[in-house]
Image (cartoon, rainbow, N blue to C red):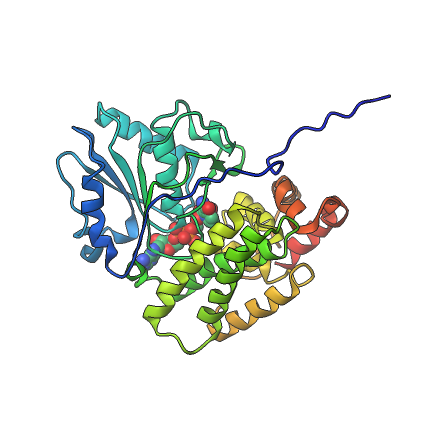
Length: 370
Ligand code: NAD
Ligand code: ZN
């Protein structure tokens, strides 16, 4: 008789989920940053601000960041999503410049910058390359104090237990108890200059998190309570005519938070799995990639996709087409491998027998529609 040994998976048991312990919410709350940081400052140890370089020539934001003593401001590009090499470079720069560990890392930007800041704070106390920590619970030492300040809403990166990085072998997050921010500042006014298309793509990331969480087999009352709230907020923000721009900004910020909380205790699904494939092979960014994929997922998420199409139409959003038509066979195979490698996402979306539905042929057919 052959005894089958079951390996525990990341989804076994109840997870002891760390949350962001401190959060400030409100219009103009960004101005409290200096006061918040003062309590965390250690002798001779700087604060390092990592800011989206879109703000480099925007005094309305940069002039409100007070650098004291040896504090440092680093502008980071978001033309590409964060890479493990980019994290390693910033960590090296900080280590070379300062003898002491920083008092804290402050990330100001969208999901890309928030993830970059989380990863840098982890890698300052853990040795080696960030690529060695892509996965689940590989981080051994507590990160440096880190603060997240979103300037665009939707990803839920401000509240999540992961920071997604593209590494030499894979696009995968550093999922650990040390990843969540120690402090988040939610100031809806910081999202004022976001271009419409980007607002939509990143906002839809939140909507898609909700659909995937609420339609998933991992659903439970914890995820559902957050997911339903965020879903309703998204419908209100993207389909009603009753909100002022200011109200919509504040609500989307909270939808992002709730959407992130919802997937914390469940998982994302088909859209994210396929979007990761696009991201890895073509460099398609997360928000727009999710939209491109979700647009073709009626068979998996009929109600969600129907609403999504209404939202696209209402806001006059165009999506690129034919993005997979020029792929080589090898690229297509890599894309399919990347997507299918995300087993928990498929298991959440389609149940234990997901392999019968998500065949390589099925994925190829879907990719060719995009
Ligand atoms: P982003 O951070 O890449 O920003 C998108 C664009 O918006 C950039 O060009 C940026 O410069 C611009 N922008 C940001 N704030 C602006 C402002 N106030 N005014 C004008 N322009 C502004 O996009 P995103 O969609 O927020 O984040 C995507 C990233 O988040 C991906 O790398 C993805 O992997 C990651 N992600 C992480 C999680 C997580 O839980 N950690 C979840 C989902 C997505
Ligand atoms: Zn997402």
